Image (cartoon, rainbow, N blue to C red; front, side, top):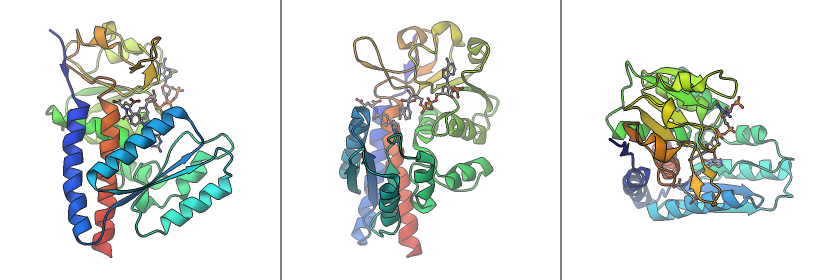
Length: 286
Ligand SMILES: NC(=O)C1=CN([C@@H]2O[C@H](COP(=O)(O)OP(=O)(O)OC[C@H]3O[C@@H](n4cnc5c(N)ncnc54)[C@H](OP(=O)(O)O)[C@@H]3O)[C@@H](O)[C@H]2O)C=CC1
Ligand SMILES: Nc1nc(=O)c2c([nH]1)NC[C@@H]1CN(c3ccc(C(=O)N[C@@H](CCC(=O)O)C(=O)O)cc3)C=[N+]21
């Protein structure tokens, strides 16, 4: 028996369709939602992601503004741009693409974004809201993973054990908190975990967010488990691949997400959803 695929591309299209309907309703009131994407430097991967985000906005009827700057931009200049976007009423979401050049403190830049426009969900206010269970923008990648679980009837994870591999502020940590909020029993693994396989073999749900190929192999997976692959790596042929040994793990798992066509497109869909949420809040408070 091989695992069933969770088709992130198809699910993201559905969510983007819903987003487009909400965007059209706002635009009809003269309140078109707007997203600003700020890219500093010429990281080739970032260029692709940013283009995909802008294209998704266009398709959904969300106004998008792409601001590209040279890698030599100073931190002060970037903070001034964020400040201008914070005060721009046509912009409801601000995304500063990471990584930033080394001379710029990304933490400082993220904290300069108005929490009301933090559609990435990276601001301390958004992270804190998630910790205490208050409303706030959810980080797009883990939010997308939760939508994927929901799509296979796993919205409530009571009595399930979820194992997250990775503890970054943008993926692993918020992922663990969202799974916890969905009533899962959660284990977070990282580079200091002694026996990763011993942990993952207990899991009903595994989320791999490491950034290394073949971190999760078939022998580490309980038969029937749900496997979500956040990783974005290149294999020896230069092809995009995740953290999971897909061909091996799909023989054991119950459900698995592909790379590409899995979590990546969902991240972009949730960015649009967050931008709409922000624009709708602005429209009702105006
Ligand atoms: N599909 C999408 O939309 C997105 C994909 N990504 C991808 O997801 C992956 C993770 O991203 P991100 O969280 O930013 O990465 P980070 O590098 O910030 O975090 C990686 C985490 O993996 C842990 N780790 C490293 N090696 C091991 C190991 N051998 N066993 C267990 N844990 C390990 C690290 O542990 P420690 O903390 O101890 O160092 C760290 O917590 C990357 O491939 C990235 O490209 C990221 C964002 C969005
Ligand atoms: N402020 C900020 N917010 C982010 O959300 C953010 C970021 N910085 N920096 C980089 C990571 C990475 N990320 C991805 C989004 C979509 C795909 C995606 O759509 N992937 C396609 C394939 C794309 C391709 O062909 O290369 C897929 O998996 O099918 C991948 C990765 C968002 N990130």
